[in-house]
Amino acid sequence: MSLVVLAGPAGVGKGTLVNYILEHEADFMLSISATTRGPRPGETDGVQYQFIDKPEFEKLIKNNQLLEYATVHNDNYYGTPLEELTRAKALDKHLLLEIDLQGARQIKNRIPEALTIFISPPSWEELETRLRNRATETEAQIQTRLLTARTELLAAGEFDHQLTNSNLEQCALEIIELVRESERGN
Ligand code: 5GP
Image (tube, rainbow, N blue to C red):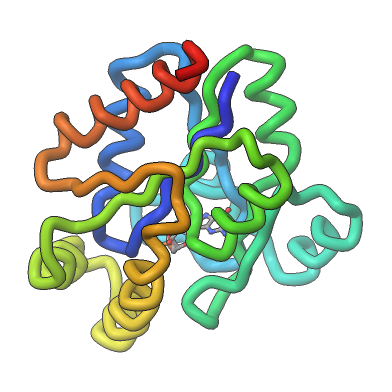
């Protein structure tokens, strides 16, 4: 089982890549994060996230029940429950973590053998278009995400691997291949 961290700016297509991998590879699973942000239309508790309130989240922090956590977009708490790691180990599956830069850094410090992959957009214009097209955020939220994206893109070099998501299938296959390679000890 490996821990696979996928990071990259909002709108880069991490969610779609994860869905593709889960649909095609039976030995991968997604870590369900806990967050204090409210569910968006179409999101269900326990599926995309575990939606909890701030006191509950702070209890998880206090009880050391998180593998990592961060305040994302200066707004809400997001974190990976340690339980997800236990679940993946028990099922002997590769655990995909779709988290932000701060979380990725914490994981690498805590678990150096984790495979960290940074996903970049084909261009800045493309990122902005994708973010607007998903129409899930307000203009102010889009601006915050673009600001965070600038900082995140500067940190791409810290990751074990960097991929560009120009083509969904190709990028997903590259991620799978990187995991298989690391499994083989290359
Ligand atoms: P969104 O609110 O759009 O679902 O996610 C906002 C950001 O939070 C994304 O960049 C996503 O990768 C990040 N995120 C989601 N879950 C976690 C987590 O458990 N930990 C950290 N550090 N970031 C997360």
